[in-house]
Length: 218
Image 1 (cartoon, rainbow, N blue to C red):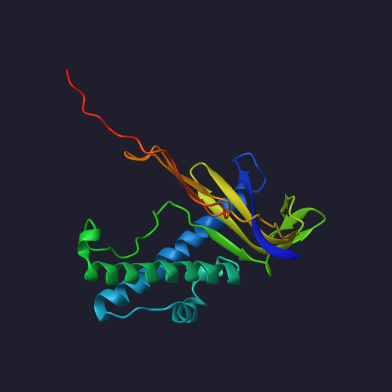
Image 2 (spheres, rainbow, N blue to C red; image 1 turned 60 degrees about the vertical axis):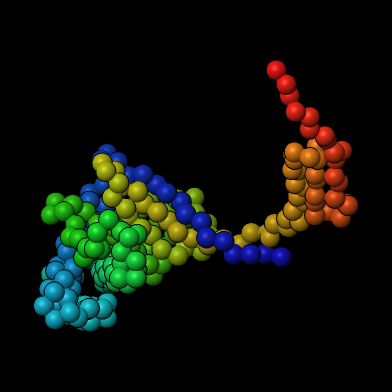
């Protein structure tokens, strides 16, 4: 029997790599959109106690410069990431109201990325393709050598300090591994009994010889 599993290939992009500039620019653009969308969301929440969800943000920002600086689906993925972060905030608030002792303080609103920082960029399998052992990106002729031969799901460019990490997420079919049932034996060293042994393999539990403890005298 075959099963489908998810795998990730990670490729590090250093400054001397031909993809460095592309990664740097697109992650910077993703940061700009994330921060602008977060500003709108924060202001609406602070002033009107309203949560602006992904669909509304996507409608509001479609024609904005920060949105257009990214491929459309990557911009959408950036807004979805922000929406998930706000969802986590509201879940934390619910938990804080139930039991604040679990927290060091009241949960804070999702933060802005640093002004000169970067944000993760996500590409769908409609944007990126693998052909002849190379991964291609939208709106560029740049390619990246890959070992992936399975079904591409998505690609992520993640800022990691002084490098970028390209994560290629894919699915592949493998043979199901049949695992033998676990056979367990437990041993208990007692005071009155030397040892007691139990198991789940059908052998009758074993109780060791009883030991009579005698007081010691100086």
